[in-house]
Length: 92
Length: 85
Length: 162
Image 1 (spheres, rainbow over the protein chains, first blue to last red):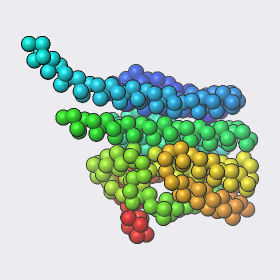
Image 2: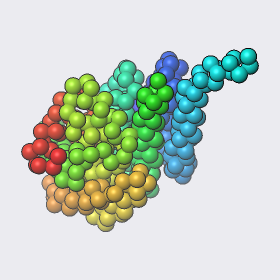
Image 3: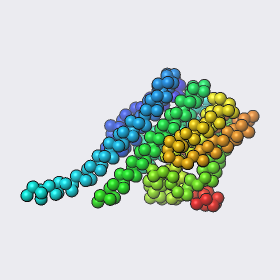
Image 4: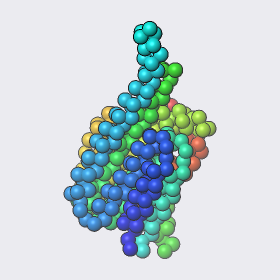
């Protein structure tokens, strides 16, 4: 067996275990980028070069959308405490 | 088995284990950068043609954009945590 | 067997000197070019390294500089010959502009790496330069962060580029 498929399969398995085990969501996105590296290597090792080029172009777009969601979630979680402390005063 | 491919494979296994075991968020990104270098080199050594070189270049630049976005987001989240407290 | 190991070590040293000198000359240790590089530099300073070496490593992570240029020059020389290096310079320039960087360091680094590989082509084949570049990036980004940043900071201070 050649080196590229072997290491790609190892990288896919380690990335999948890492996505499950880590608890912080930035760490989850980093391990997802690690899994994508193995996936593109596995596609390339079967000589599907056009599929590999397209999927490696589309990979950062998915990562950027996930990161925008994470940033919006952090901003929302920080600003929500003020509203919840002011609402009882307004209701009274 | 060639010594060039064996060297790159050994380095890639070491770097993959170190990504999995490091605790800090910002210190994982240099290991991911080293992993991208190894993967681009292995792709072009497996497919010995100009199309393989084009695949390696497109993969490398796209993954660099991805790690750039992750580092920018870590900086923005630290800024949010500092101002909102 | 021994001659292959000697070729690998010589190629690794040539790649290391090429990308460190070009990146230091174009001012990577001076300031973080993009906002993500500042985070990595501060973090490396916190675990006991040098701040200028930390900025250098953050700039390598966040945009394709002369390190990526050396690898791409070796890859295209392996696949296409001497003309491939000039195509690699164009692709690295496009990648630099995508990451919001000026892009002088990557283009100049690719052209100098192509000339160095062409000068060595009688003795060392191009695939040894690919493995040599991987070893060179492993000694900086993957081996020991604090010691590598101290080494890069002292090199930048000796060249007078801080």
